[in-house]
Image 1 (cartoon, rainbow, N blue to C red):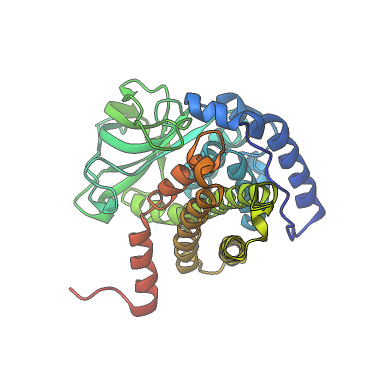
Image 2: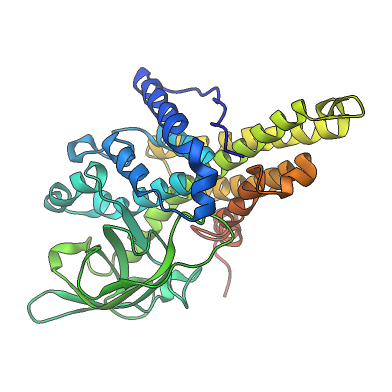
Length: 391
């Protein structure tokens, strides 16, 4: 059964420009993404043409400076665009979020010359990025990464190591890479911009995942990959701080994507409940099911309100790390609950691939893991409340 286009959400947008932007996004979703989402995911096809179209339409650089090809949109608007895209196909919504994450380091910590040289192609020139922080032996403990960057006598760098769980691994045009250039711990890490066609860079066979089969997730190997010092982002040893800065924003992207998936599942459940009859009347008439739908809708609205609160703090230049962790935690847990309940509403049909809710449930699971597991989010929130743990 082909996916339906997501139902329009009654959004409170800050400007006429944002409202025009949403008209464009919804048109692209209805015409280019939603109709074939189920088929494309089932076949495991990576939607490179869709990302090219989004780039041409100015949708890959929305939260960045227009001087460098971005869209000058506040996070309040950008995140709602992610939600719309993810509701149609999570591979696309999360892919845009990862691309934005990959651009963050250069856009916020690069020199003016670096930004002028690289950002226009990254934000609106058809390129697609990937973010390389996690490794086979360092996931939640990112400060223990082992990939090394060694500087030679001429000032260039050679990067050697393996990154893991890389979205767009093997298909990205550029990689933002965190590597160890100094001693142990967070202070020994530096950030680099590495071209996707660099000699010595290769990707393993993509992981076989339970969901998001159209989005390649792979290990990326660096075998003495050489980059000039002009591709170093920020100061030596500043990489971990750059990574943490990006992750606060990236967590909001995941939260928005999660609400997109949850909204899509809710829409399917409501439509099915209205149309399915048992005992001579629509099952939407039965109180037990009506209460379930009410709880699902409440979780979606609450999650959306929380991620927008965090986004508005970010847009105002205020601290938002705690709220970003809260949004990521709540929205992804809500997506898991709502999608599971949507399967229950559809009964046996919900467990089949004839309806999209089983795919939504499989996709929701990964959102509780990426960009910091939800256990890590609880640790972040607790530190803001009670201070760091005693040793």
